[in-house]
Length: 125
Image (tube, rainbow, N blue to C red; front, side):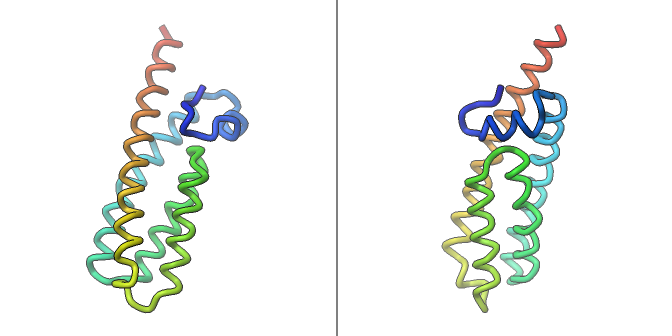
């Protein structure tokens, strides 16, 4: 049902084969991740470490809902790193890497969302 990039057994259990619900959650997650990616960049550029950490705290569960637990773990590590540093500049390398990872994940999620839409459209025909 889901492509190999995702934890298919978890998603099958979570959505119980209801592709319409899964598609809705994927769509909502893509929307929120896109918005929060912009917020993260703004908070980083403004040097607001607390706000940056809150953004990553908010997006972390989205990766669970879409069956990407490895990315959930990366986000958690970055969120924790935000709490450990005293100056946002200490996160430069990790921030650039996590922003790139989120961008890549958005691409993967959009591809899967397109695949899900095609699946549900072909099923309706």
